[in-house]
Length: 328
Image (cartoon, rainbow, N blue to C red; front, side, top):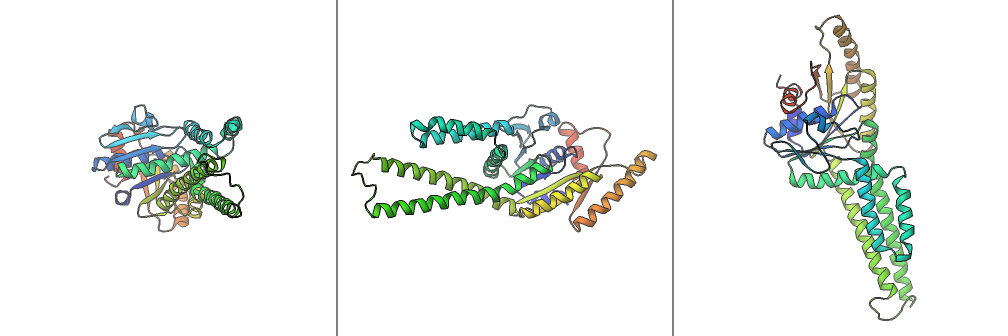
């Protein structure tokens, strides 16, 4: 069931509480799809990166080969925020007069420490990777940060899109006001092609171009996230109190952002016949599985067993994929 769901999509997000096997699940799915002949990009957005540890190789901000037809990327939130602010700074320095550069630098220093700066930078990077990933790969798999971070990220395209549209509306009103003044003869300084007015118009055109470009990028991401035929969001969890309750909450938050959950993966299920301790845990887990099923209705749920060892490396991940995707 899960293989069919993933095979029909171009983008897959794996979310859920920390420590429930998101990275392992994302890696197993990515490996399975690459072995099926698809070109796959596996992206970790979790600040506590485990991708490199799981695959036994260094993974950085640019595509790193993990297996045949499978590349991996780890997004460093601090580096992404720094790169984002550097790009913004370069643009502002181009647009603003020389005497205001000190103010620009002060604004950037304050922005680096402002709430939401990392989230905005991460969103921009995710939007870029969705665009380039769908161009260069058959499937992009995102191993996301723990639930709270993920819910905020999924809600940002709508909020930032509205904010950018508001900025564009302000620019349009300003343009109309300027045109009205020029129609009355205000601000006319002659035919000099490099007059202050011409410089302002060139700057304003550049600002409009940047805002339109940003709006279009966020709109593409928002459309992709909401398109169930292109994108699937899968939540990984354990059959325990906190992961189950957090999953129920995350599903609701994603729905509020227009993102539907396609399936759930319950990892590390204790066996019923593994001795008294594991049998007791299995019974406890069954109670939370009943609560989960009551809350999510007909939503597909995949369960994987508690394994004797962590699946580290390609072959171990392939073995885990067999449990995950129904081959065992």
